Length: 249
View 1 (tube, helix red, strand yellow):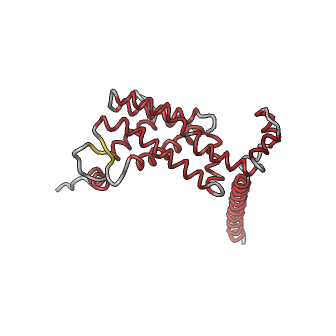
View 2 (spheres, helix red, strand yellow):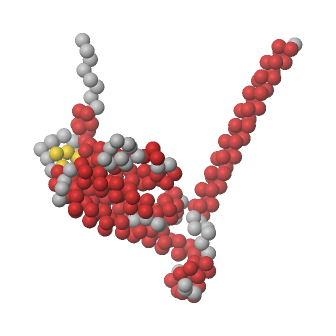
View 3 (cartoon, helix red, strand yellow):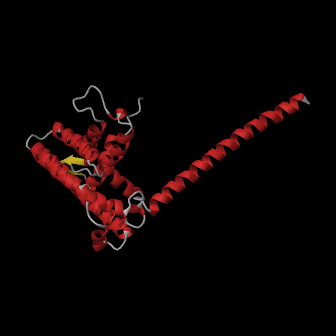
């Protein structure tokens, strides 16, 4: 009897812990859904038209002369952020790329990549862009976000092209410079998200350019481009690099 009760007790204990964990997980999921749904309805919920006008030192009448309501303002604000705010950063990046092209090599690529991440993290509006990407860019404002991303992809590819062409390198087919720009733009955003939360693991000690991001950009460019005269496309190059070692007899 005692042994039987012990078995029942252990099972009951296990069931109780499992139930607690299921409850926690359900509440976590519900909380995440509520946060996402609230942000999707209005990611700028904290903005009030009157407060906005007071900060800008204009009357509410001036606001309504431009937009019929807050939603129309959010739509244009989304277009502004995605199509203009980040694009402006490329003036500095392309200027640095042109300087680097005069002394082509790994250092110039690493320095540009370091600057790329610093400029992104230093942009005072990037938090708003992140929020837009997580909310309106997936729903009501998809088209402005797509246009903005395409512009950033093209500019990113053009910027690094300025450094890679003096090295005699070109995109491995079927990639283009814009395609490489897509990869690098996604990369800088991913590293940017991580750096805002926990940047310490992104630094590499013992290197002249310690940023893991910069080293990754250089490695990606070395892989996705080829020297002129190398006829291998991307697939062939990867197969060569990742071929298993010959078996020992």
